[in-house]
Length: 530
Image 1 (cartoon, rainbow, N blue to C red):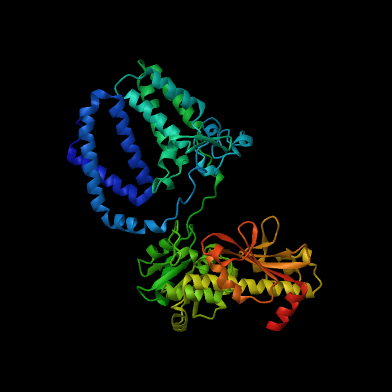
Image 2: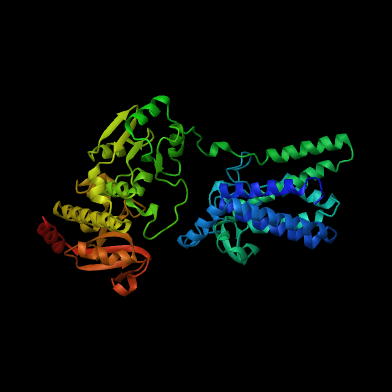
């Protein structure tokens, strides 16, 4: 706007900036674009004398946007094509918003005073890593002083921009002490794709940028050298009050492959093959191992981030992926891993040292060709797996996993009753204690009836019968019912129990499919199957 840089230089830098933001995060790119537009609008409204310059700035901004769009055209094409696979917000913006009190009270993520106010900040929604609105009383006071002292055409627009970021960071509804009120705020206007995936709590980064400008101006406005130094000291104290508590989280170096590991891998896998590296969870180091080998193979698995839900193809819907991420072994793991590797053309599985020994032992029991050295394990997918499992679908394998678990839980219930267990006391842990169930089905949650694998085992019918259940979506219910036998009733909880009706289950609505048995039918059914 002041002619200090050439238009060509501005277009180049701005186009590269937009390209970088899109590559870093679509959340960053979309919010930065929106805030840039609104900030320019604030200057247009509150600084009329700058409007002629602003018009030239807008033309340059639009031009740089077109250049960036050309550079990003392949990404933008697939972004538009894949929008249908995004079902609403990944995380609800209403929940991940800054609490009004967070601007006044530090959370434990702040080094000084963070734990002192935990009785208040523990009520805030979200988590400590996202509760970053605390600016401290000193920086808040200096910002207000600067707003009062500053002179120039830019002052009113910057005040408006600072207020805008403050309001946006509070989210679509005002949060006070952890309570989400019915007071609607401006961000409610932007709850549409892709902005509905932006978390308002993160907008505080723009507030800190504004505060940095205001405090810098306040320091520069001092007319004497001693006064300027004293303002520096006060500002530094203000910054020290918001220094983060880095001890809140564990820090560790990623497990990089050694030269010996790389040579071992290259000796035992084919160049250019598809390789799955475990663990594949968001903290997995697969990309580092790929780079360490000089891109010797193609990386299968991941992505290391959010997996969009896709009913028929979604990577994260394969039961094997749950095992890879959690390192918990599903009892049907052999078929599940085989189906995943065959359908995803995985030639080799590399297990890095960070994977737990139980999971490694289970993989070894599959009987696939296996090579091991220095806690690195390589499993090669046999040709028989590609022949036998290549046509399996994700829905087929999900239903197979649920059916397998239902039968195991039913067998455990019969075993428990035969060994004298009382139906009213039946839980997964009680069945494990009597040797009727493997530890993989250990109970979770407060009531203890849910297994770690998503199944349910417990009393039904006033304690005289037992229920065997599994978490499902409505459309899978009718596929699972024929796989079971001998039940007295079939119920679907969503969350209230109801008798299964085909018309009401043709949806993706999640719930719990429950097979209810009395003692006689349970024992007779299991005896007949044996």
